[in-house]
Image (cartoon, rainbow, N blue to C red; front, side, top):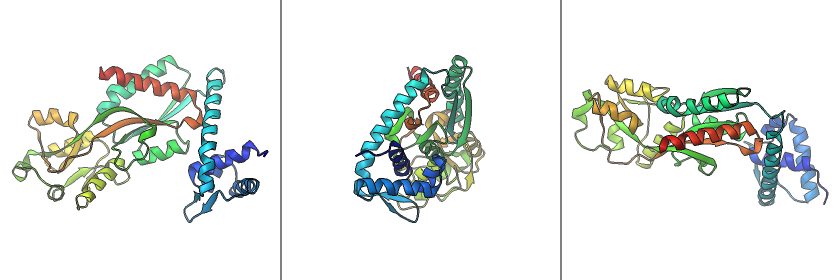
Length: 305
């Protein structure tokens, strides 16, 4: 059976994105061209590979079976191309990296920026583009090849990307409140009781909001945010001024707790452990991004010692 590689390439991207329109945009083609190619492949293989839905396409049983092998083949080809590109003077000299808005500034300033700085000094000809977005948007951008890599926060509760992540560090949040609320929290409180107070947190589009929404729902209550902030430093400032309660990483809360500026709200229910991870899509073969990822991972490993 002599089937064109281009047919498998189109199949791969439609299966990866589960969308003919997204695959067309990614391949700089038109939807009719993509549809015709898929139809030709289905004719050659004498089976149906996709089922159309209102939101895109889904793989049939035969489609899933084929994708398993095409995925591996594409991965090998991409790796080979990346290795050749790495040895070429025409290697891609730009890297786009996304930073989750929920990453504490302390981590960005003490670990992420220094590691990017070391990479930049070693590779001065490489152009770097830094973007800030919520974790869910960054995961989509990496998956669709819009950016090369992303550093995200996640908990694993409702994030299926963990197998593709390289974990940089793990941390836990703690609930804190200003001294105005001390009499309200003399004993451990339930989530439903805590949510009766003003809550300071991230917007609904963030992974952090999604995580707390999931946790609260599992306890039979509805999570909400009264004051939306864009970073943990803002959350701490609002809490210190007795405006509401907030959840921030334990290591950020500890100094303020020790100084008596805020206190820990003890909860009956435990909060899930969280992580800061780096996510990169190997299929797009940017050798410069692979090198930068190693710089970042090594910096975090060295800092942990």
